[in-house]
Image (tube, rainbow, N blue to C red; front, top):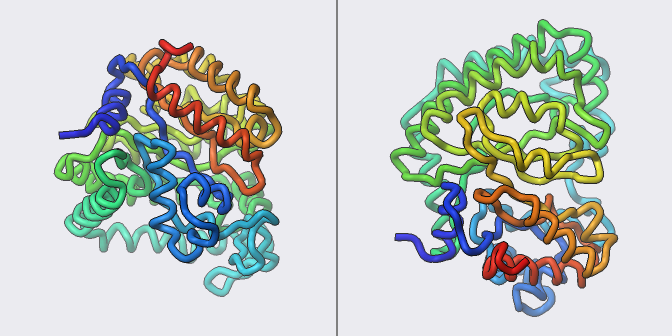
Length: 377
């Protein structure tokens, strides 16, 4: 049996008509504001991050949560990332050395891929333990669900595999140059990654069925910036999309709804993702060119309406707007969202220093639409 909060999320996933619009995972990184909303004393979060974070999530009325990252706000303060935070190839790491290879050219990227990445994928395929993977997925999802309690539905995140662009590993410049200059190597890597992903996702299918997991899963891989795709769509069509489609194919047979996280202007890729089996989208950087109204009117490959996690903009409306702007933006998202399958949330993480009144107005709006839905417009 599911309680009313979980039921609202499940009915939305199943695209049933609902009175209210459920709230999806909304991640706040402003610690003082997080503590205020959680109803705890200043300084409590640092001492008890998970307990405080859970109070915050419950107090804003989240119905469905896919990613549980209670310690994440500790990485950022009002002044930005802490100096103690470990730098990565995309967050200021000056010298990238992987397995003894200094990544200072596209050729170095290719050398590492051929010497280490491709062999590692082949080894992982040979050593893959399906039974352990099934057990681990179910155990992980059940553990988080117990922490969330009966009011919040834990949906899928982090256990379905697919090939991806490796800029987070090698850094943007050298990886993207290697991608352009050595397409055969890139496709070979995507191919073996998909080989591994395929057998891993067969285990994920078993976990979904045997664990009776919710049929909603968010795929998360940034492939665009505010200008558009990081790489040419024709190259993706040739090198990446066939292997992406092959890797997720076993999961689609469960009836699960795969939705895609949108960062930047992803419009050019959206029809290709839908053709591969994606059934919805989350996020949206409207100011970068994401056409929310157009996306909400699209249908999946099998004719279903999109599942849309409509996010109030964390890069424009919440930090720079007014309370009235927030209300109008939320009304716009509801007015133009799909008739069924609509969640409300923030478009991404709400960073420290975001306008307090706007965040509180946003949370008030989430509660309003959970209760009244479109009837309140």
